[in-house]
Image (cartoon, rainbow, N blue to C red):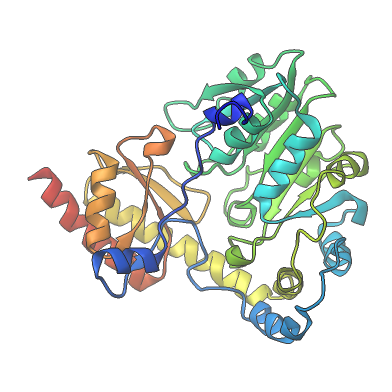
Length: 368
């Protein structure tokens, strides 16, 4: 079959998601397993979204509105953009893939930080792009100066996750301004703001991607998966110029956003109390986890998101497996080349304390 598949497909490594709770409980015979691996909202979905889903269940025999008309209209009003500035995806992952399909061809260059969100590299490989991976700084921040140096006449797209996944660090407004100054107009800059709501409230020097939409070729992506708690419904969106959006629409699958996702997102936008509660909880519990890591004498990266990467000082896969036996699912950073780091999502108070108790036990065992 190798002769039938495109050669570039053979180089693509599958994205491996965090283990589901059910799988761990089944494999290890455990109960009450907690998952702090995938940066999900620990409070569950927006309650208003759940009510909207229940009301919409009777309509699932019908195809959804392919244009997401009502959601597009409402979101455009909230963001202060035109409806033709928006496109919706099956998660912001699909927005990334649509942008690459529309603008990156065989042999074109994509500039990507390392480590960063794995889908950038995977989707670029699928288009047979030439990928330039630019290492982050020692502080695990984007090295925008080196990324800018890597841009050539063949570069079609640059990815900036702000804040970044998996590091949790962010690019400041000053750094982004300097990076964008003088860039070729035909270059697509993809600004991934999946964790925008967490960073925007807490960090004064964090830039709002919408302020840069006048730049030709700027695409900003956000999602309902994180702060709104709708990860299982897969809905994200892109914001750009009407021209850029029109090209992305040409590669969008029809009916890509299901009815339940559209109705849930519409309702979630109104659930301001849930949004406020989520962000405040993450800010408080991040500090608890920081304090616990310091007591364990573990280095960590201060985060602008709802997750933290921490250096456990040993093989991260071994620590990950030992934590599984304690009923705690985290994310080992082996796939990102951070061999002694794990990533942990900020959970509920009870979940965070269970994680720290398990980590203490595992670290003690690993070091003995």
